Length: 274
Figure 1 (tube, rainbow, N blue to C red):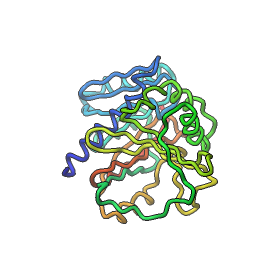
Figure 2: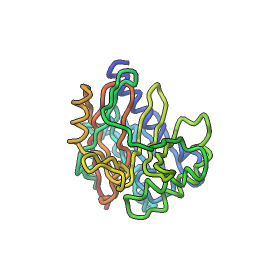
Figure 3: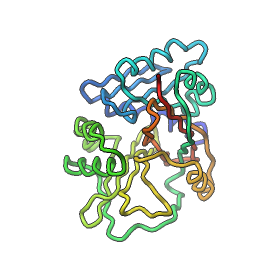
Figure 4: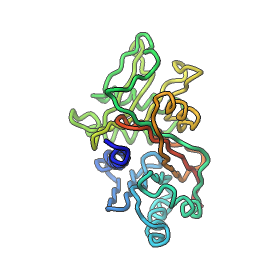
C-alpha cells in the first residue's frame, strides 16, 4: 500500500470501528451518509458518541455541521468530532472552534508493517495476554479501562450491552486483557478492517506501568513528544488528525496505531459546547 491507500484504509477502519458496537446497542443511533457519520450510543460518554467521516465544506455544509452538534446538545450528551487527514482536517477546525470546541493538545497515530516492524522492549515476566471471549473477561477489560479514571459506569454498561458482538469468533473488533498471576493488569482494543489492524484503547494499571513509559491511553491521549519519538525510532512518516470533544475535562481514548504502513500523527481537540 502507498501512503494514500494507507490513509484511506486507516480512516475507513476508524469509522467502521466507531459505529460497530453502537449499531448493536439498544437506544443507539447510527446515521451514516457518504460525507458524514454520526454515532450516538445513548450514553453520556464522549468516547462512544462520534461525529466524523466528514467531507463537508465548512461554508456550504454549515447547516449539517450545526445540526450534528445540536443532536448531542439537545440530549445533553458529550461527543467527539474526529477530523481525519482525509475528512476535514486543516479545513474545518475554525468552524468547529467557532461552535465552541477547542484543541488543547496533539495526539498522534502510528502505522507500520507487521512483517518488518521491530518494536524494542521486553515482555514482563509472567504476562499472559488473552482475547476476551466471555463475560468475566469483559468485566476485567472494563475494570482496567476505568481503573485510572474517575468511576464511570457508562463504560461497563456499553461493553455489557454489546457483549455478544465483542465475543463473536468472527468479530472484527477484538479486546485483549493482559494478566499477571491471574490478575488483569492491562488491556488493548484492536479492530481489523480494510486490510489493516488498528489498535485503539490501550491501558495498564498504575502498579505495573513503567514510570518512564506510561501507557494508559484510556486515561489520557498520547502525547506528541512520545509519539514523535516512536515515529523517529521506527523510521516512518506522520500525518495529523484532529479530535474534537465536547467535554473539556474528559480526554478521549482513541489513541491508536494502524499496523500496516507509515505512522500517522493526530492532533487532539477538546472543548465544551455552550
